[in-house]
Length: 229
Length: 397
Image (cartoon, chains in turn purple, red):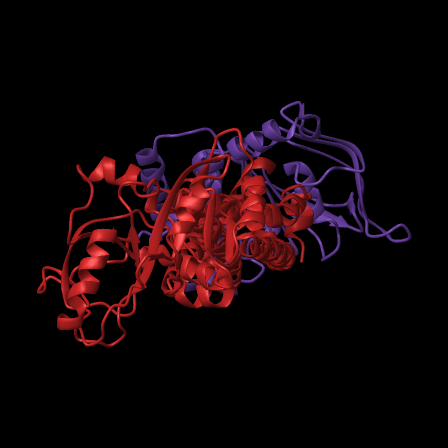
């Protein structure tokens, strides 16, 4: 499903300052896998995720999604691909503060091809119910706890029934109990829907939730990473 | 949820900055409509006043030029007299097509025999008149009879009185002329016959007698032949008839027109400065607003929003604030201009006609479109910058 081929990414801060974030990374992720990428801050995990999603252009190398090179597509098709095939869960509070939980979950269809309004609303409500927030449909993000907000974000990520779920440190701001609740949620979503999951986290311990764990350091994949028992 | 509703939510969610953009839009639109109303109103007023006079030249006794202008523009009565034979002398001049004499009178201020405050009264000679005749023919068959009058748009009869008392004489108000915004709106017109009747009876009915010196007129209105230059006729009058001043109506309000032009230049300059400053402020405020929301804009892109969708939502947000601010600005400015008409007229020393609802609506629409364009243009650069930024960069701290 995902084919990362010798990809490097260097951020150009100024003429003199160039920050290499990912260096010559190659990785294959198959359909239905749950891959957890672990590594310390600055190891290049988030950049790798952004490269997969087409949110940033690689300095060199190729990223293919089902054989399609994301950056070869024009903006319209690239956006549609993200909208229809990829779900995102971010590290930071990514809910739009002016919208309710339900409206936040209904956002992806708004940016994509037109869908039946009633269906969209029903599906959004159903997803919120699935993540245990059926009583928070009309709540604004500020009225929700960190864990509840991440559940809304997960529901939003699933809204367009994506084939690929990308999660960037989804539990970094949560307490230990909530962290495991959220990771359990990812695991059950993966099991129920068969969606391919690529999750990055600084916590090596969370690697056990995936079907495969990869470690990154210094912008490269550490070869010694072992699959979870 | 659609893009408009989404933009509205975003606008309402960032209240302080939205208010600033709202007020800037209100200022832009309000300034445009207020200055347009004042300048256009003054210009229309002068034009209509000239149309109302319907003459090419007004001949008055020497030394009364300024007072006549004040009478026509502001409704301040003027009293001046010259021999009625001058009308015949004028009619005999080559190039003169028609001459019609008029008497300039006024009501008494604070007198019980006059039901209106000091008002400019104009008596005309029906046989020679060519200024009121078109209106009279269209609106009153047979013209005005003895004891009848027509008034400017601001003249009305108090309901309990039924007639307008002038020197104790009850006048029937038969109609009102179209508004001009000038002193003519507060003036009243009747025939020579009515004027002399009022004067005759005033010794018995009024607290003070209306004095019309015998065999005199206040002015003579002249229409020249089609192929004749009024300026040449005016020059001839100056040369051949002593003690009078011919005023060409085309240049009658030249001073006011020059003053208006000067005002227009100042307003355009001020408008330009205000717009540049306001647009710069909107651009800064909008830059701050989008910068503050840059992560969420990155999220939108990650969720599949196209660059153009992000751009549209940001510009829509600006446009909605511009529309709301523009409508309020236009309403407030129009109301202020309407309420402070007398003050504006006093400050500008020129008449001023507030437009009818339909022209007002089209002017308002024009001002709204300008404010919409101004605000959207000011928001365009920050909106473009963030829309085309790499989403991953937008989402970084």
